[in-house]
Length: 423
Ligand code: CA
Image 1 (tube, rainbow, N blue to C red):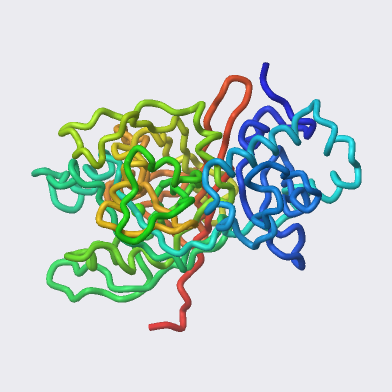
Image 2: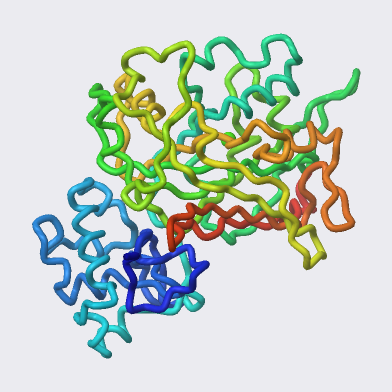
């Protein structure tokens, strides 16, 4: 029998009792940020639940980790504490448990309608890294930028490629993205141009949130890597392709990426995703021992990107992909990140890179979908090679279980124009 909550949850909800993703919110504009979990159309205020003494287990009794403006302290506690919190909350919210269900005063304080709250970036993000883990994306980028001879560079099959991103410009879903200005690639014999980006793009990604870190000089073993990952969010790694193409040789992405990255507000835990684990693709050539795990897994998460063109009401689906298109797993990414001794810290995040599938309908960015602008998309009567001012991009992600779904909600952002008074 499927576990049910006393809180009403619609059949198509992303947030049944099987999910219980963690976020940080303000119940109203004047109150302090505090952690919460999503249940149906409500947010359960964990600062209230914690103050009521409901977390009485080994790890969370007397802990102040839910009286914080972010989840970092909770993340640092590690998987035993995360499992204790999940078990406590799943029991508290279940249909046959009276503690909260029959306590009108506590219920009134603790359950806040989701449409009334302001969601915030749930973690203090010290460092952000972005990987390049979909083979289809790597291949398409190679074909577009370098041509058909060896589109995937030989290192790609041995090394999970990444670059260090910019943590300060990571914003919460719903935040407008200002079109960046910068230098664009010269055409023919002309000089590089400067101005608002002409090739603004989204990248369909997910990001892993780091729990307990590692000491400097102490790599994390591949088979223990999952214990250092709290969960996943949706991530839009907005990209200015013209700036990127001109600047990326030889040190990689910089201003073409660092103007903004959007994440979804709810961190879905690996424990909630476990029923949706699938085998990761076989790797050929075999990975080096430090990247070889006893069980290599992905998750079956259906991903979708829609665009609402500026001035239109209609939203058009532009791609459908799946998290299981990743070649390098998130545990391989984490183990690789630390193999040189680099220390990760609680609240760090790392993006998967654009999650493209093998079919053109599953490509994860406009660069691939329009083949660098050569084949514009038709979206409800307008065409798009890249994003225009006023366009809104909406990501969703969901795992379909038997009788319930575990979802990520949405990750949205609208393009606002570059300021006109800058030259
Ligand atoms: Ca990226």
